[in-house]
Length: 152
Image (cartoon, rainbow, N blue to C red; front, side, top):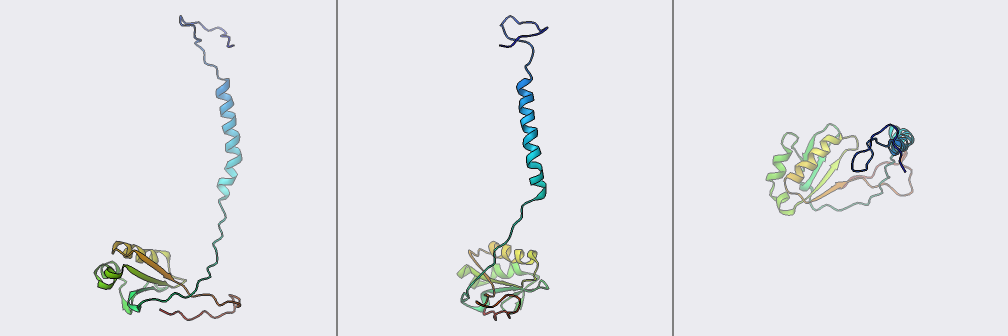
């Protein structure tokens, strides 16, 4: 169906000119797709995080609780291990034996400090990481309710 205007035919019977109509069609479709999706990409996705309603989980021993304060201090039990949390967790016999650790972080603690504790626990061979939270009091609004005391 293609007619070559001003083109020469080769010996094999094929045309020497390229038909650009399908190429233009594809490019127009891509242009429309990008024009439709570009505003969605720049606006981003709105993500709403869920509210956590947790119940108190009993801990086995306070010596296996790592606490991260809002000042980025890391406490293992009652000892300040901010400088060497990786070494302390790797050398602690109970952590190596039980392979379980509880992390209690202040709600104003930076993510980097908590991530450092999680990475140190994983490199020490801990398989069970538990994040301790203060459970919400049922029936009380969150603005006027006092937080329940944390039980290590």
